[in-house]
Length: 154
Figure 1 (cartoon, rainbow, N blue to C red):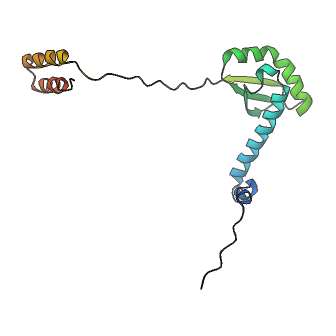
Figure 2 (cartoon, rainbow, N blue to C red; figure 1 turned 60 degrees about the horizontal axis):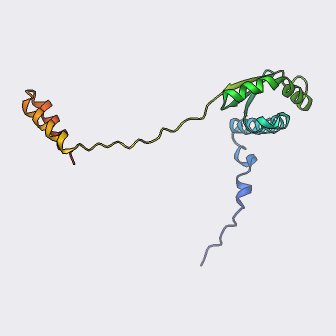
Figure 3 (tube, one colour; figure 1 turned 135 degrees about the vertical axis):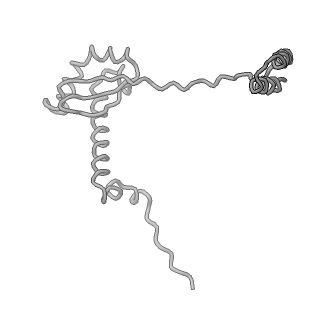
């Protein structure tokens, strides 16, 4: 006789924040902080001039200081000239005591090093020179290493 199959729940109910964080207050606090940062990011982007929208990432609010991060020092300097107007707009939307100043940090984008093609093959002339040098070398270990290197020729 076949077993009755269990009813499947939709994934969106399984992965709800309340369900995931029900047994972990630390995880719940982390999700709440992330949600608060996302809300502040939206308000912050709405208070910025068009040039700066999407350029800076809100990190946190700490004792009346909004800490943001950007990738370019030049754009950060331009925002510092505009920060009084941005702070006024943020205070109007979030409350006068919420944010008193901005702290702008620079975190440049990590550069991925380009892979350099290195030609590790020796020419036949270089290999011949190495073989001749190995014949004149007194040290046995060094001679073996030079001969091994000479064998890597084209």
